[in-house]
Image (cartoon, rainbow, N blue to C red; front, top):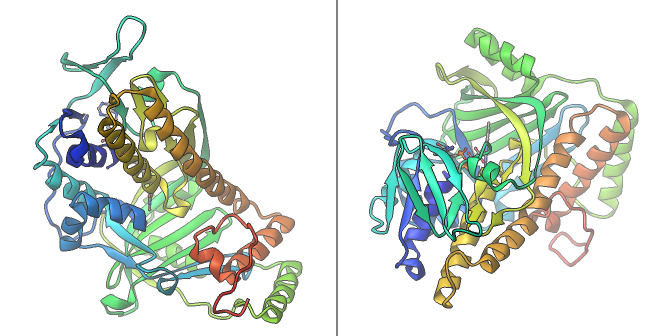
Length: 431
Ligand SMILES: Cc1cc2nc3c(=O)[nH]c(=O)nc-3n(C[C@H](O)[C@H](O)[C@H](O)COP(=O)(O)OP(=O)(O)OC[C@H]3O[C@@H](n4cnc5c(N)ncnc54)[C@H](O)[C@@H]3O)c2cc1C
């Protein structure tokens, strides 16, 4: 998704019109046919990503087919009463859009087909790379089929196992979460019309969060983080039993610690005194009645971050540079953020008479993106760790934190959800 979008954005950038772009894709040429059944691989896209996809013309193709609208979102803790909600009212647009990975790629490919200065080679598996050194200013890419290419700037968008990153030899900080994400397409029991399945639900269970992302009437996409053993069991269960497990994960009552409940009640009263919204308007999640046949799958989860995103003549983009836990639905959004940033920096550089491989531009890209990516990644990893324990003081801390964040209306709207920089300014809630 990231590499194809980057090629399309660079190819459509008029400031880069005299550059030739070659996209090397290891897999077969991607063919997409409209199907009634939804794919089990979807991503929640934020508004910046929607703007990027609109700017290259791909969003129109997505909108003409289908997407799920997230108009509100409820996130809650299974072992306490803490909860946070996001509503469309807080934003000018939807909170997020749920799009199938395949449809997104197909939509970008449709635009890419009309871009004159981009060539795409499929089944072009990169075997080895030679990066610029004292003897050469260009990178050389050797494919498994024996073909080779040289370029002034090599952009590695080759995913979490990036060969480009490994060849660059940059430090890569990584760990596995020892968790798997089980995905499936769920049928919802409630007979809601299209407008009503617009809530994204996420419940933090002791083993990891379970999330339901709306696709359309009565259909949602499941992302359930759990232990590898449980994931294996969930994949092997008969479908009816799997549905029971999903309902139990959404609805099961966990024992609540009295100290946490007491502090939460006291905290609610404190919020009321401050005239901040307390824990009053909890919505009930839907019941699941079935799953789309064959839609179950599981993916290992990990964290990874390259300490450097560039070296002379080469840069990393998307999961090749950074990999996050899907609990906040940010992975590919970070990658698309890289795309927007790099496209702008390279366009401006060429417009100002610079060369495409100029390291100052690549450094600027790295600085801008790391300023954004690192805090986001640390916040996501912090939340994973905060919710991966049942220690009472931690449950207490996170519950009060979540409730407090929910109460701070301006904090949510500025999307500084995970950073409690307490600042007060007048709002329509009387603070
Ligand atoms: C369960 C789950 C749910 C997720 N949900 C969300 C979400 O809601 N929102 C969100 O923003 N993110 C989400 N993500 C993260 C998102 O899926 C990834 O961030 C995204 O797929 C990364 O895209 P990419 O293009 O950078 O890398 P990849 O998708 O890994 O693509 C890498 C590309 O490089 C090619 N390639 C690799 N090696 C070679 C080679 N040697 N030669 C040639 N080509 C090669 C591959 O064929 C592929 O096309 C989720 C992830 C998971 C696992």
